[in-house]
Length: 621
Image 1 (cartoon, rainbow, N blue to C red):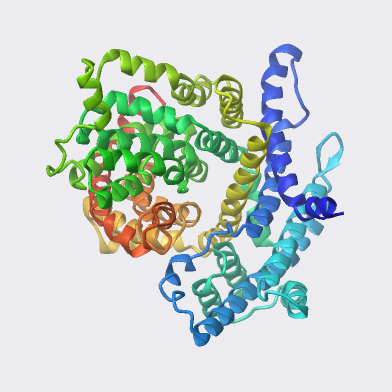
Image 2 (cartoon, rainbow, N blue to C red):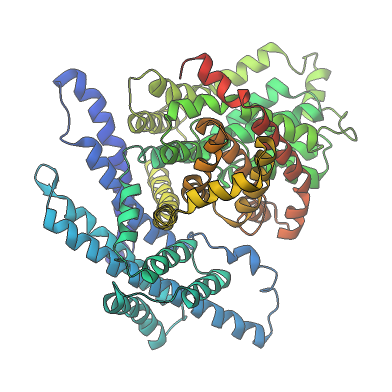
């Protein structure tokens, strides 16, 4: 009975993991079936896209159970929650009820709006594949939002009838309000103030963005179903399945011994002194972040390996924590970074072009971090790493070719992963989704068979973790796109172009102002939400100054790297605080030099467009 209860309570986790596994398998079957049979699975790409919808909604429900839904208040309230007085406890309880109850109510509104969207789609009744109606899959939207509302409402109280009443009452109230006021014009100001308050108190970001999108459409008396329509459109975007599949590959490398093997290779190549270890750590973190997407996984995977090595090399602990935390924010510009793919989708730029465009700027950002961040400053940098001292005593050169070759051979499968990811896509042999599926399969096979680091149980956990991460991200993206669509329909980009050109006539001054604005935006917005909300608004403005969309994308993502280090949205600070056992304030202050360095790098990239556009132009991409 207990086993059945456990399975039922985690069916969302299992369903999301199964959907993700099928998203990987179907493209691989397609790759094999096309040359052998001439045709593959009927509407395979559409099936994969709709499996992404299932994974997103149920992955988000699973993420809620483990507390993985992104909020703004995690860092904001960290300083105020330290006291344990009764008054403080009551304040925390009140804040929790308001935040979680408000989020549950928004879920009820989204559940109603999704139900209206599915009802309209049912009238069209188009089939996905093999006669399966599309609206059958679309039903996961009202079901998913309903379950999220139920779970968020239940968090309002610890136990008893109040917990049950809140679990059902808040989402049901939202559903009834949506049904009663749908199509009517409501005032925006009180709704906006309520949304801001719930975000500050700790409500998930998706609820704030979704609530604001609903409020904006509500004030104009427009159908609420427009918001879930936006969520549906971005979730079933043809290129979007590449996001969870590349993330899956990155998580597999992060949860196995790949980090250790890559660390040994970079240290063998660049080690020999403290400065060499610093360079190796920065490069390793950047490369690893390209696969993990800058979500903080790099800090968890490499922090325990690199900080002891830096300390052993005579590097101060605080600067070591700062280096690992800040270098883990880089790599967003390197393929197959998820934000890089996300920008390509939003800006309608070829993904392989963005992959090429990010290579040189990524190197520039690492160089700026090391030089302008002061991590290569003299003062304790002359002490050789202890392991190299031992090697020298035995007559071995620290950077002996044999040691490098040995480390390369041990990490050969990890080193070849980017070749598989980029090669399949750049060669034209595979679509972005198929390339991502190949990369995920490559990660599974190499770690399970070549290294025997990936057991079936660990693979199942990685599938679940990946579904939760992408589920939470896609919820934010879907709600942000609804908000972005409203702003575009309201003519905000055109008004912004006119105002900015009238205020800032000089292109280089505009680029400097753009970098400063994106720095602030990155501190306040999660990177994926920033891409969906800001790119449609800022890209037309940038193009009006003659800035290429590819160049703008590199500027945008480089500036967003600063956002990883700035509370309240700077998740790297929180991950580093948890990983190294230091206060948030300690980590935040330690990365201040890195913020200046990354800002300098971003301005440099913005003023020298050839850094971003040179390689794609040279290779004709």
